[in-house]
Length: 123
Image (tube, rainbow, N blue to C red):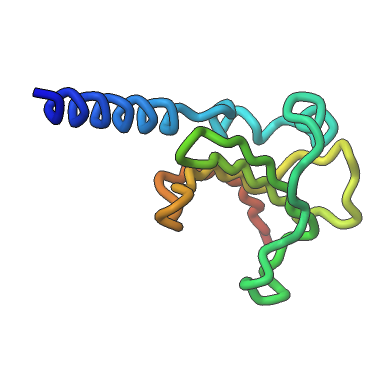
């Protein structure tokens, strides 16, 4: 009887932690495409990371990349915003926004949601 109670409590705790982790702390990514950098800093505070992705080739790297992270017990949510305009201005709108859930001890991102602003060149 004691072991059943322990198993039920452990399962309930694990399910509760997973449910808390999958609720995103950031608004939907589509709603962030029209916000300026200063309004994003006002909403989320100073960014925790501002380095562009070094795994990308130089010609694909954004001019500026910022990220915010929020912890959710067993996982972290990361909001990454890239800007391609140069020179970068605080009133610039993002060109790419992604929101990913990173499971801490597993080491992979799941799920991710992304939105981007495309530029079309007409000749």
